[in-house]
Length: 353
Image (cartoon, rainbow, N blue to C red; front, side, top):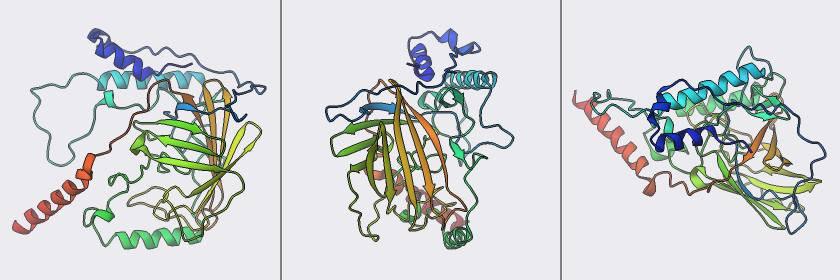
Protein backbone atom coordinates (compact mmCIF):
# COMPACT_ATOMS: atom_id res chain seq x y z
CA UNK A 1 0.00 0.00 0.00
CA UNK A 2 1.26 3.49 -0.81
CA UNK A 3 2.51 5.47 2.15
CA UNK A 4 1.31 9.03 2.56
CA UNK A 5 4.26 11.29 1.71
CA UNK A 6 3.09 14.12 3.94
CA UNK A 7 2.84 11.81 6.95
CA UNK A 8 6.37 10.55 6.39
CA UNK A 9 7.76 14.05 6.14
CA UNK A 10 5.89 15.18 9.23
CA UNK A 11 7.30 12.28 11.24
CA UNK A 12 10.74 13.21 9.97
CA UNK A 13 10.20 16.76 11.13
CA UNK A 14 8.94 15.75 14.56
CA UNK A 15 11.86 13.39 15.09
CA UNK A 16 14.20 16.38 14.96
CA UNK A 17 15.97 15.62 11.70
CA UNK A 18 15.83 19.29 10.84
CA UNK A 19 18.70 19.20 8.40
CA UNK A 20 16.67 17.14 5.96
CA UNK A 21 14.02 19.83 5.84
CA UNK A 22 16.28 22.38 4.27
CA UNK A 23 17.53 20.14 1.48
CA UNK A 24 15.80 19.80 -1.92
CA UNK A 25 13.40 16.88 -2.02
CA UNK A 26 13.92 14.04 -4.46
CA UNK A 27 10.54 12.31 -4.01
CA UNK A 28 10.54 8.55 -4.17
CA UNK A 29 7.94 7.77 -6.80
CA UNK A 30 6.79 4.28 -7.60
CA UNK A 31 4.42 4.70 -10.56
CA UNK A 32 1.49 2.33 -10.37
CA UNK A 33 1.38 2.07 -14.13
CA UNK A 34 -0.32 -1.31 -14.30
CA UNK A 35 -4.09 -1.63 -14.87
CA UNK A 36 -6.19 -3.07 -12.08
CA UNK A 37 -6.81 -6.80 -12.18
CA UNK A 38 -10.23 -7.21 -13.82
CA UNK A 39 -10.57 -10.63 -12.13
CA UNK A 40 -10.05 -9.23 -8.62
CA UNK A 41 -12.56 -10.55 -6.09
CA UNK A 42 -13.13 -8.31 -3.06
CA UNK A 43 -13.44 -9.68 0.47
CA UNK A 44 -17.01 -10.24 1.70
CA UNK A 45 -18.72 -9.17 4.89
CA UNK A 46 -20.98 -11.41 6.95
CA UNK A 47 -23.89 -10.59 4.65
CA UNK A 48 -22.05 -11.75 1.54
CA UNK A 49 -21.64 -8.19 0.25
CA UNK A 50 -18.34 -6.73 -0.97
CA UNK A 51 -16.64 -5.42 2.16
CA UNK A 52 -15.98 -1.66 2.00
CA UNK A 53 -15.70 -1.19 5.74
CA UNK A 54 -12.77 0.72 7.16
CA UNK A 55 -11.10 4.07 6.64
CA UNK A 56 -10.36 5.55 3.23
CA UNK A 57 -8.92 8.75 1.75
CA UNK A 58 -9.53 10.57 -1.54
CA UNK A 59 -6.73 13.13 -1.09
CA UNK A 60 -5.22 14.05 -4.45
CA UNK A 61 -3.46 16.83 -6.32
CA UNK A 62 -5.67 16.24 -9.36
CA UNK A 63 -8.22 19.07 -9.71
CA UNK A 64 -11.88 18.46 -10.38
CA UNK A 65 -11.67 20.23 -13.75
CA UNK A 66 -8.89 19.85 -16.31
CA UNK A 67 -6.69 22.86 -16.83
CA UNK A 68 -6.50 24.34 -20.30
CA UNK A 69 -3.95 22.78 -22.62
CA UNK A 70 -3.62 19.44 -20.81
CA UNK A 71 -4.30 15.99 -22.19
CA UNK A 72 -6.51 13.63 -20.13
CA UNK A 73 -3.48 11.70 -18.82
CA UNK A 74 -0.12 12.94 -17.48
CA UNK A 75 3.09 11.37 -18.70
CA UNK A 76 5.02 9.62 -15.94
CA UNK A 77 7.68 12.32 -16.19
CA UNK A 78 5.01 14.96 -15.54
CA UNK A 79 3.61 12.87 -12.72
CA UNK A 80 6.99 12.56 -10.98
CA UNK A 81 7.62 16.30 -11.33
CA UNK A 82 4.28 17.09 -9.64
CA UNK A 83 5.04 14.71 -6.76
CA UNK A 84 8.49 16.24 -6.26
CA UNK A 85 7.13 19.80 -6.32
CA UNK A 86 4.50 18.98 -3.72
CA UNK A 87 7.07 17.33 -1.47
CA UNK A 88 9.32 20.38 -1.72
CA UNK A 89 6.40 22.71 -1.05
CA UNK A 90 5.62 20.79 2.12
CA UNK A 91 9.22 21.02 3.31
CA UNK A 92 9.48 24.72 2.49
CA UNK A 93 6.20 25.52 4.19
CA UNK A 94 6.94 23.48 7.31
CA UNK A 95 10.03 25.44 8.33
CA UNK A 96 9.75 27.11 11.75
CA UNK A 97 8.43 30.67 11.69
CA UNK A 98 10.74 33.54 12.58
CA UNK A 99 9.73 34.65 16.11
CA UNK A 100 11.10 38.15 15.35
CA UNK A 101 9.06 38.66 12.19
CA UNK A 102 6.90 41.81 12.02
CA UNK A 103 3.16 41.52 12.64
CA UNK A 104 0.95 40.81 9.60
CA UNK A 105 -0.70 43.63 7.72
CA UNK A 106 -4.37 44.28 8.54
CA UNK A 107 -6.77 42.29 6.39
CA UNK A 108 -5.98 38.73 5.39
CA UNK A 109 -3.90 37.26 8.18
CA UNK A 110 -3.27 33.99 6.34
CA UNK A 111 -3.98 30.47 7.52
CA UNK A 112 -2.11 27.30 8.46
CA UNK A 113 1.37 26.39 7.37
CA UNK A 114 2.05 23.27 5.32
CA UNK A 115 2.23 20.94 8.34
CA UNK A 116 -1.55 21.14 8.63
CA UNK A 117 -2.34 20.40 5.00
CA UNK A 118 -2.83 16.99 3.41
CA UNK A 119 -3.73 17.60 -0.21
CA UNK A 120 -2.38 14.25 -1.30
CA UNK A 121 1.09 13.51 -2.58
CA UNK A 122 0.35 13.21 -6.30
CA UNK A 123 -2.30 13.03 -9.03
CA UNK A 124 -4.87 10.25 -8.99
CA UNK A 125 -3.94 7.05 -10.80
CA UNK A 126 -6.94 5.29 -12.32
CA UNK A 127 -6.36 1.87 -13.83
CA UNK A 128 -2.70 2.68 -14.43
CA UNK A 129 -3.30 6.22 -15.76
CA UNK A 130 -2.28 9.41 -13.89
CA UNK A 131 -5.24 11.67 -14.59
CA UNK A 132 -5.24 15.44 -15.16
CA UNK A 133 -8.82 15.90 -13.94
CA UNK A 134 -11.33 14.06 -11.80
CA UNK A 135 -14.04 14.78 -14.36
CA UNK A 136 -13.90 12.24 -17.20
CA UNK A 137 -16.91 13.38 -19.22
CA UNK A 138 -17.51 15.59 -21.12
CA UNK A 139 -14.28 14.85 -22.97
CA UNK A 140 -12.72 18.22 -22.07
CA UNK A 141 -12.74 17.25 -18.38
CA UNK A 142 -14.74 20.29 -17.30
CA UNK A 143 -18.19 21.03 -15.90
CA UNK A 144 -20.39 21.76 -18.93
CA UNK A 145 -21.94 25.18 -19.55
CA UNK A 146 -25.21 26.03 -17.87
CA UNK A 147 -28.48 25.52 -19.67
CA UNK A 148 -30.57 28.61 -20.43
CA UNK A 149 -32.68 27.97 -17.35
CA UNK A 150 -29.61 27.30 -15.22
CA UNK A 151 -28.00 30.56 -16.30
CA UNK A 152 -31.20 32.48 -15.58
CA UNK A 153 -31.40 30.94 -12.11
CA UNK A 154 -27.77 31.81 -11.41
CA UNK A 155 -28.27 35.41 -12.60
CA UNK A 156 -31.28 35.77 -10.32
CA UNK A 157 -29.33 34.35 -7.40
CA UNK A 158 -26.36 36.65 -8.05
CA UNK A 159 -28.63 39.71 -8.35
CA UNK A 160 -30.30 38.88 -5.05
CA UNK A 161 -27.01 38.32 -3.23
CA UNK A 162 -25.53 41.53 -4.66
CA UNK A 163 -27.87 43.48 -2.36
CA UNK A 164 -26.01 42.21 0.70
CA UNK A 165 -22.57 41.82 2.13
CA UNK A 166 -21.39 38.38 3.22
CA UNK A 167 -21.51 39.39 6.88
CA UNK A 168 -24.80 41.30 6.90
CA UNK A 169 -26.56 38.31 8.47
CA UNK A 170 -25.43 34.89 9.72
CA UNK A 171 -27.50 33.06 7.11
CA UNK A 172 -25.74 34.94 4.32
CA UNK A 173 -22.43 33.38 5.33
CA UNK A 174 -21.20 30.29 3.52
CA UNK A 175 -22.47 26.98 4.86
CA UNK A 176 -18.91 25.85 5.57
CA UNK A 177 -18.26 28.92 7.74
CA UNK A 178 -21.39 28.05 9.70
CA UNK A 179 -20.16 24.43 10.07
CA UNK A 180 -23.31 23.03 8.47
CA UNK A 181 -21.76 21.18 5.53
CA UNK A 182 -18.35 21.47 3.91
CA UNK A 183 -17.79 22.50 0.32
CA UNK A 184 -14.50 21.56 -1.25
CA UNK A 185 -12.25 23.91 -3.15
CA UNK A 186 -13.45 21.96 -6.19
CA UNK A 187 -16.93 23.19 -5.26
CA UNK A 188 -18.95 19.97 -5.00
CA UNK A 189 -18.57 19.16 -1.31
CA UNK A 190 -16.76 16.44 0.58
CA UNK A 191 -19.96 14.42 1.02
CA UNK A 192 -21.60 15.71 -2.14
CA UNK A 193 -23.25 14.31 -3.90
CA UNK A 194 -20.97 14.00 -5.78
CA UNK A 195 -18.18 13.54 -3.22
CA UNK A 196 -14.88 15.27 -3.92
CA UNK A 197 -11.58 16.01 -2.15
CA UNK A 198 -11.38 19.09 0.05
CA UNK A 199 -8.29 20.50 -1.63
CA UNK A 200 -6.71 21.04 1.78
CA UNK A 201 -7.04 18.51 4.57
CA UNK A 202 -9.43 16.05 6.24
CA UNK A 203 -9.95 14.02 3.06
CA UNK A 204 -10.69 10.88 5.06
CA UNK A 205 -13.80 8.72 5.39
CA UNK A 206 -15.07 5.82 7.42
CA UNK A 207 -17.38 3.27 5.78
CA UNK A 208 -19.76 1.24 7.94
CA UNK A 209 -21.99 -1.51 6.52
CA UNK A 210 -25.02 -3.45 7.69
CA UNK A 211 -27.25 -5.69 5.62
CA UNK A 212 -29.61 -2.81 4.80
CA UNK A 213 -27.46 0.32 5.09
CA UNK A 214 -24.11 1.76 4.06
CA UNK A 215 -22.96 4.69 6.19
CA UNK A 216 -20.32 7.17 4.99
CA UNK A 217 -18.75 9.29 7.73
CA UNK A 218 -16.53 12.17 6.66
CA UNK A 219 -13.72 13.53 8.79
CA UNK A 220 -14.47 17.05 7.54
CA UNK A 221 -17.22 18.57 9.74
CA UNK A 222 -18.06 14.92 10.64
CA UNK A 223 -20.79 14.86 8.00
CA UNK A 224 -22.66 11.57 7.59
CA UNK A 225 -24.52 10.13 4.62
CA UNK A 226 -26.74 7.08 4.97
CA UNK A 227 -27.38 4.95 1.88
CA UNK A 228 -30.46 2.77 2.27
CA UNK A 229 -30.44 -0.49 0.34
CA UNK A 230 -33.48 -2.00 -1.34
CA UNK A 231 -36.46 -0.82 -3.36
CA UNK A 232 -36.71 2.98 -3.03
CA UNK A 233 -39.53 4.47 -1.00
CA UNK A 234 -38.86 8.08 -1.89
CA UNK A 235 -39.50 11.07 0.32
CA UNK A 236 -42.08 13.64 -0.83
CA UNK A 237 -40.53 16.18 -3.16
CA UNK A 238 -40.76 19.00 -0.60
CA UNK A 239 -38.55 17.18 1.93
CA UNK A 240 -34.96 17.92 0.95
CA UNK A 241 -32.09 17.02 3.34
CA UNK A 242 -28.70 18.64 2.81
CA UNK A 243 -27.30 15.55 1.10
CA UNK A 244 -30.59 14.55 -0.46
CA UNK A 245 -32.08 11.09 -0.18
CA UNK A 246 -29.93 8.19 -1.33
CA UNK A 247 -31.04 4.65 -2.18
CA UNK A 248 -28.57 1.98 -3.22
CA UNK A 249 -28.38 -1.51 -4.65
CA UNK A 250 -25.69 -4.07 -5.38
CA UNK A 251 -24.84 -4.79 -9.00
CA UNK A 252 -22.31 -7.59 -8.74
CA UNK A 253 -19.34 -6.18 -6.81
CA UNK A 254 -20.45 -2.56 -7.30
CA UNK A 255 -22.60 -0.48 -4.97
CA UNK A 256 -24.83 1.75 -7.11
CA UNK A 257 -26.63 4.66 -5.44
CA UNK A 258 -29.08 7.26 -6.74
CA UNK A 259 -29.59 10.54 -4.90
CA UNK A 260 -32.52 12.91 -5.36
CA UNK A 261 -34.28 15.51 -3.17
CA UNK A 262 -31.05 17.47 -2.59
CA UNK A 263 -31.49 20.63 -0.54
CA UNK A 264 -31.71 23.70 -2.83
CA UNK A 265 -29.12 25.45 -0.67
CA UNK A 266 -26.62 22.73 -1.59
CA UNK A 267 -25.60 24.35 -4.87
CA UNK A 268 -22.51 23.72 -6.97
CA UNK A 269 -19.82 26.25 -6.05
CA UNK A 270 -21.40 27.27 -2.76
CA UNK A 271 -21.34 30.82 -1.43
CA UNK A 272 -21.34 33.98 -3.54
CA UNK A 273 -20.78 32.26 -6.89
CA UNK A 274 -23.38 29.58 -6.35
CA UNK A 275 -25.12 27.73 -9.18
CA UNK A 276 -28.39 26.60 -7.55
CA UNK A 277 -29.49 23.10 -8.49
CA UNK A 278 -32.96 22.49 -9.88
CA UNK A 279 -35.51 20.21 -8.24
CA UNK A 280 -34.62 17.58 -10.85
CA UNK A 281 -30.98 17.34 -9.73
CA UNK A 282 -29.93 13.68 -9.58
CA UNK A 283 -26.59 11.98 -8.95
CA UNK A 284 -25.69 8.36 -9.73
CA UNK A 285 -22.71 7.07 -7.73
CA UNK A 286 -20.79 3.79 -7.95
CA UNK A 287 -18.29 2.26 -5.54
CA UNK A 288 -16.20 -0.73 -6.68
CA UNK A 289 -13.36 -2.27 -4.72
CA UNK A 290 -10.68 -2.82 -7.36
CA UNK A 291 -7.91 -4.14 -5.11
CA UNK A 292 -7.20 -4.64 -1.42
CA UNK A 293 -6.26 -0.99 -0.93
CA UNK A 294 -8.46 0.89 -3.43
CA UNK A 295 -12.15 1.66 -3.97
CA UNK A 296 -13.00 3.32 -7.28
CA UNK A 297 -15.67 6.00 -6.76
CA UNK A 298 -17.57 7.06 -9.89
CA UNK A 299 -20.29 9.68 -10.26
CA UNK A 300 -22.63 11.16 -12.82
CA UNK A 301 -24.55 14.43 -12.37
CA UNK A 302 -27.83 14.69 -14.29
CA UNK A 303 -29.70 18.00 -14.11
CA UNK A 304 -30.85 19.12 -17.58
CA UNK A 305 -32.57 22.17 -16.09
CA UNK A 306 -29.18 23.40 -14.84
CA UNK A 307 -26.49 21.97 -17.15
CA UNK A 308 -26.33 21.65 -20.91
CA UNK A 309 -25.34 17.97 -20.60
CA UNK A 310 -24.60 15.34 -17.92
CA UNK A 311 -21.12 15.25 -16.40
CA UNK A 312 -19.18 12.93 -14.15
CA UNK A 313 -15.87 11.42 -13.18
CA UNK A 314 -13.79 8.94 -11.21
CA UNK A 315 -11.90 9.29 -7.91
CA UNK A 316 -9.93 6.46 -6.28
CA UNK A 317 -10.28 6.05 -2.53
CA UNK A 318 -7.14 4.64 -0.93
CA UNK A 319 -7.04 2.68 2.30
CA UNK A 320 -6.22 4.92 5.25
CA UNK A 321 -4.68 3.01 8.15
CA UNK A 322 -5.03 5.77 10.71
CA UNK A 323 -7.91 6.80 12.95
CA UNK A 324 -10.54 9.18 11.59
CA UNK A 325 -11.04 11.71 14.36
CA UNK A 326 -13.99 13.98 15.09
CA UNK A 327 -13.68 17.38 13.44
CA UNK A 328 -14.90 20.09 15.80
CA UNK A 329 -15.05 22.85 13.15
CA UNK A 330 -15.29 25.66 15.70
CA UNK A 331 -16.68 24.64 19.07
CA UNK A 332 -19.77 26.63 19.98
CA UNK A 333 -19.89 28.24 16.51
CA UNK A 334 -17.91 31.20 17.84
CA UNK A 335 -16.49 32.05 14.41
CA UNK A 336 -19.90 33.17 13.15
CA UNK A 337 -20.46 35.41 16.17
CA UNK A 338 -16.96 36.87 15.92
CA UNK A 339 -17.35 37.45 12.17
CA UNK A 340 -20.56 39.37 12.79
CA UNK A 341 -18.90 41.36 15.58
CA UNK A 342 -15.91 42.20 13.37
CA UNK A 343 -18.15 43.33 10.51
CA UNK A 344 -20.15 45.61 12.81
CA UNK A 345 -16.89 47.09 14.15
CA UNK A 346 -15.66 47.82 10.62
CA UNK A 347 -18.99 49.50 9.83
CA UNK A 348 -18.76 51.67 12.96
CA UNK A 349 -15.23 52.68 12.06
CA UNK A 350 -16.34 53.69 8.56
CA UNK A 351 -19.19 55.81 9.97
CA UNK A 352 -16.90 57.58 12.44
CA UNK A 353 -14.28 58.60 9.87
